[in-house]
Length: 218
Image (cartoon, rainbow, N blue to C red; front, side, top):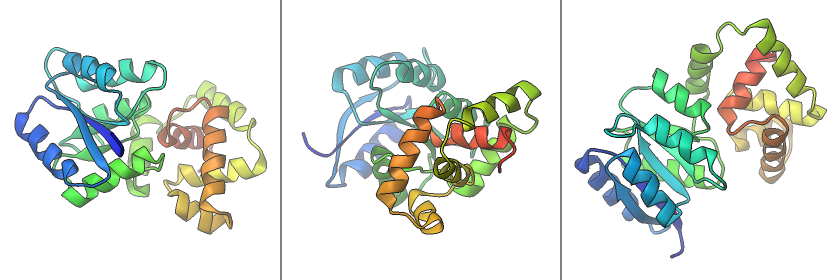
């Protein structure tokens, strides 16, 4: 099957049905599976190999946090979007720290849900600057000396241009915004982001933003 392969893991059948209806209406999205909890979700994901997983946080048997952590520890994992009813709560922060690509509120308008799936599948960020700043405040408000030193050590691995991109990522800018600000193509920005994620041992852009904050570069 061509298109973006999406799996939905949520214990509410109405949420699963709604998301399937919304995403199934997009010509470039294919729903490959649904599951009602983390245990069934991990099995379904192993079986269907989706590109993107929409993962609820609060579920029976195995919650979305642990399911996400287990999933992202595997080889070549899908990108995970966390589903929540609360904007930037502690569980969302933990999921992003484990490597989730972003989160969606369950009352997000349908067009924005489809757009988020497309962005994440393409490796684009889906967190606004305001949300990124809010998340950083929650997890990195007062970095310890050890954390600050570690962040500076990691950022020293970057070239001058990569550091500029990292600081822009830390401000929550999209690839297109970074391209405009630093006078480079979007493709070049994507290449820089890919390299700095590797050099910083980071799974996602939020982790880069936290490192930038810890190093005092924001």
